[in-house]
Length: 398
Image 1 (cartoon, helix red, strand yellow):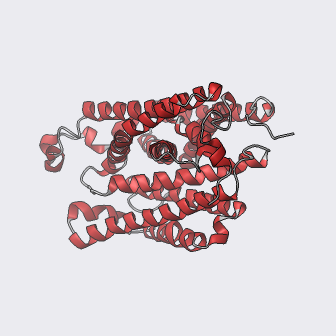
Image 2 (spheres, helix red, strand yellow):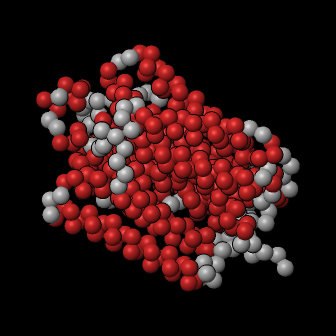
Image 3 (tube, helix red, strand yellow):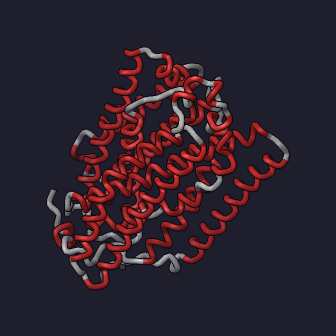
């Protein structure tokens, strides 16, 4: 008997309900404690909540945006190898709709995160020069457009793919290809400026013309790592039987490629800023190479590039499922550390200062997304069964 091609989340009822209860409890604790500190006027705790929540939110947002990127690329280049794993990417990418809802808390803590919202442009020359870009109304308008574009693309790509399962109509392949072409450039623009608005603008005096590419590199790499982990988890419980070592080999090569790409962009950004030595640019690295932040920054250089680069360089590792999962977990951890170094130094300028909110925010958003993702897995087949390229993907020879 063949393994099932659909994920029945009701079959694991106890664990699914347990995850739902945990997600509800974490949401209550996280937002309940934030509301309590807000009512008592504890500004330090509110700021800590805001920065910790942004750090966790950026971590999951970049992963889901990366999954949308790989889905767009799949259709744009008419890829065959990724057909068998595309439904997983579609389900992960469509979590951007959930993340849009989870963005609501920023409406209440935005001035604690983005200092420019509380300043008078007439009294700050740099802020004045960046008007009207750094204006409240335009910030929220841009944010709405980012979600509109990204969520619409993710939902359409998944909807057409699921609709094709019913009768295998090749028109849906054409529809998705059109969506991919139409959304490729808007996706790049939205991801770039979301990174600028939400992360770079934490210090509105600093700027980098390479920031959008830096955010993209981390997004694509982390998304591929999550794909490896999710596909392996499904294989371990009897699903995804069409995914072979050939597919793992390609995913491993993409992990290596984007590890190198991330390092190239990170080094290029640092080198150009160091060489130019412009105060408005160097302030970012001066903060992150002072105090205990220096040690975390050095750990990031070694752990995010040298370790995965050296270990993924050889063929054997890229064809070993368990090894790839270990490397995927490591790279995801380093991606999380990367965003931690991006966000938290703005709050803790003196050095690293871990908070319970850091862990609580990661756990809360992660549980909510996991709950929605499992529900999506059960709503349709694990494969795009109606895709005409599925047989070629099943018999992939790398």
